[in-house]
Length: 129
Image 1: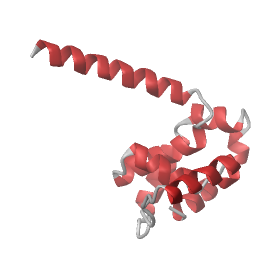
Image 2: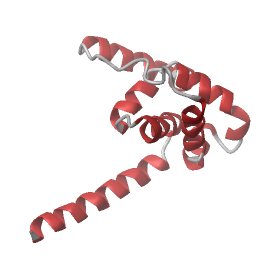
Image 3: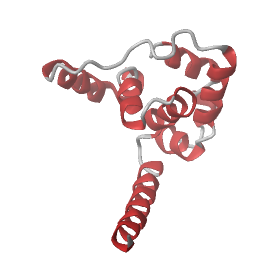
Image 4: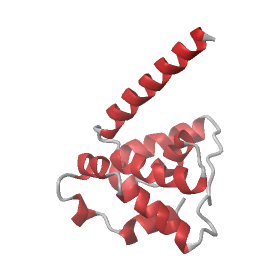
């Protein structure tokens, strides 16, 4: 049906522009890590963002505190332990995926982001999820 084709095309364009706006914003740490969860573990990106953001006090401080209050207030059961039992190959793929999103890291942490984030740091963050 022609109308659904046009609607699908518009949705794809909207999704593309949404992705661009996120890629060049300050959401870098959260989204970079979320993509690793999505790619390797199949966690839906929106849920992955929540799982990740819940562990990013170091980067987003009071915003994470407010997020945790909203989760509690709304009785949201956020998945935990999603990386439990992941093998080294899977973990390395998640880390590679996250590190491959350089614009997100650069926008969130600055030009020297490679000195501020390491494979070990990303692994430790993933292990809290």
